[in-house]
Length: 590
Image (cartoon, rainbow, N blue to C red):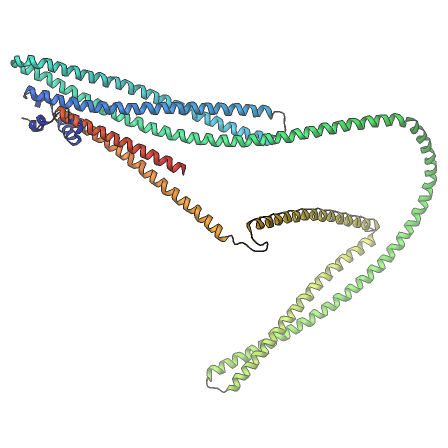
């Protein structure tokens, strides 16, 4: 008997109960995967038939798992197709609304809105490209689903072949009992069948791996679809906002058009009135021309008088210039005297400051000498301390005097600078008067400019006062509303309400909500990871069971037991998936 197969244990296994016994099925898969064809040639026919029944039950288990995986893939493909159709309808609606908005906004001065609409169109084109990419990926998924269907058909054919082989074995059982001499041929056939079974197991393993890859692709496609849906919702919100702005601008433009029509009617009425007045004024213009000629003669006589008056004005201006020069010279003299007085004061103050600084230096030298003497003679009398205190007081007084002198010097310097500026301006005026550049005309222009500036400031003050009055009215309205609300609540009008507790409680609630959301998101992520780990473990267990069942011979009862247990695992896995989906939905609703 070969070392890898324990025929006593294999003969005890019932193939019908094998799906209910997971551990036994796993062990059989491991042991059967290690069996070679040469080891089965010398075995009895009954043992080989029993082993074939065990492998058959294991193959049924794998076929059921493949069918469930294919059903899940088909459902995911249908859901994605529905979702794709919904997205296409949304995009078509948005494009139609964009065309309507462009038609309604045609020929109007809405450059800003058009630029934003162009940006939205570019974003829509990007989304269309993304949708095309998604459609290509969905087509790939459809191809994968078709491949899965083909594999499913192949699996069904293989199951049918297994059933046919079982029937052949049952039919050949009776003939083999009568023909025991032909054991070698039967063993060779059994070895071929076992080899075919191993090939089928390898094909099932490849199918499971392909299904895992398809599931990963489906998850990625779902994530991409969710992201595209969120982006499309954002685009719809922006489009609705722009639509409202366009509607508002349309209303404003309609109002402006109405006003323009009204003004055009007024202009037409005024032009008609002007035409009628011109027709009435033709005889009047003839009389006016005659009068104009008379006035020309009178004006020529008046021009001579104006020339005489201009000569008189010229003489008077010269007299005024001489008088102004005398006045400016007197002002300059007074300013020069004032500057000289300030200079003398500054000199006096600087001399005082120098004296005070010299006294300060002497006092500091005396203080240093006294300090040295104090350090030498620590046990001196109180007289030295009193002299030291007096010297310090005199020092403080001198410091205050020097500070005051410095302040007065700074003030005097500032006054001197101002006087220098005034002197420079006065000298410039004098030069202008002497050269004849600055005269009465320039002074009149300056006065007019000053008056215009005063008028502009007065207007600004009026505008500001109006705005202040409006704001005061608003404040009074707010105060009245506040008093009314206080009366409703039952508070006195002058009592102050402390809002710090309300703000703190609001801030704490917001922090609590954020913390709860973060905790829920972490729990959802952990549940998702656990679910994926469980799925991977279940698939690994199923693969190991298939290998064990192929390598070790099991009874039909054992295989039925393993099938029932695997079905229970699938139900529990689906329950876990449902729980994770419920948790996801609850977290999203919160």
